[in-house]
Length: 98
Image (cartoon, rainbow, N blue to C red; front, side, top):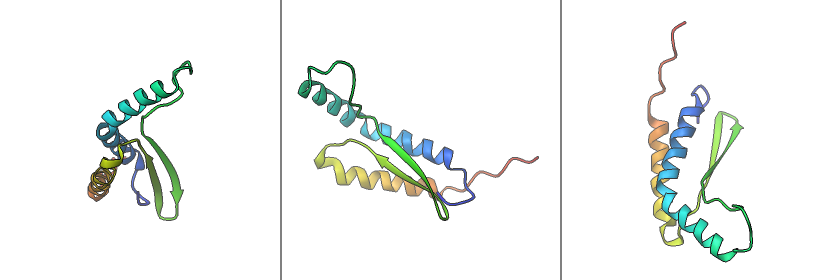
């Protein structure tokens, strides 16, 4: 996210799109984990996506982690990249007048 743009709306929009795109894969991963490790009490594994935000020269860098099936990986990555590019290409909202 370039300097001068509020990263919060973009981060939230990307998070929402990743959650929607990976909901089924995340649910399957959690179920498989519970079957593989039945003796563990509580939920130690979550298939929910995560976003790391890091300040860099010229703005903010986002790293997104998510769970998906291997055969869906490349198509999902391309879809999410396109969504991020579309979000970054939208004009920034005008600042509020004081």
